[in-house]
Image 1: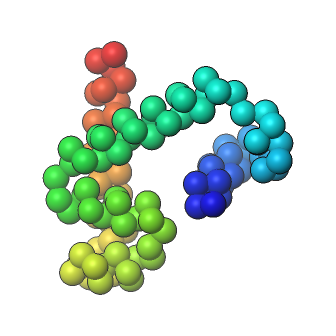
Image 2: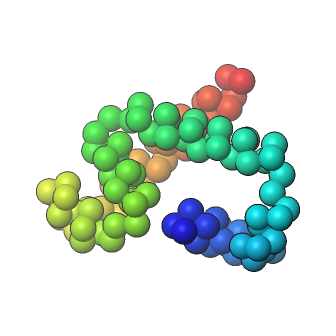
Amino acid sequence: MTTVRREALLLRRHDLPVISSTEAVSELDPAAVVLEADDRHLLWKTVSTLNEPCRTLLQLVANDLGNQQVASRMGMPTGSVGPTKARCLEKLRTLISLQETAQ
């Protein structure tokens, strides 16, 4: 359910049409499903290569924990979560770009 919600939000941000869950089940392209699963695997494999606190922070954020919960679990001030997350995401983007360039 969380994945579906996130994907719908992503589509909405990019102004792409959102299809209903019944349409999604009947119109899934098996190749697209495999590619998406592969992309997710590569994403989390890349996250696992990050140093702390980035690895744990991104895992907590992916589980829809709010900044207060993330801060509490990581022992950091709540106001530090956003800037730390931004730096971690930038590191992740750089690693993914390097991987895409190498392919």
